[in-house]
Image (cartoon, rainbow, N blue to C red):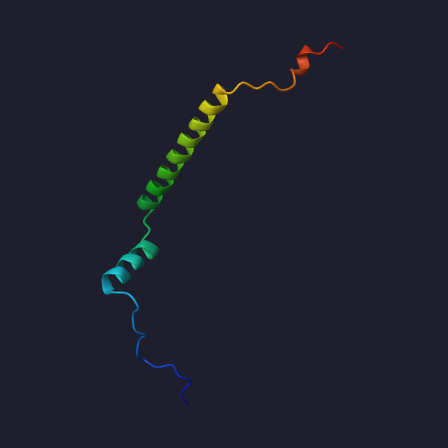
Length: 72
């Protein structure tokens, strides 16, 4: 009895080079590549934090005074 499954592979909807590239990108993550990707992401985050700190440092906040200035 057959339920429609056979030995013939499904036809590829992409060319062989694209298939190989996608396969490598998905399954061949070495620890070195992973570390490099994480390092790049951390570098970007640190740069964004520095940029935001610069923005905050240049802003003047005119909110409530510090609690130490209140007299008890």
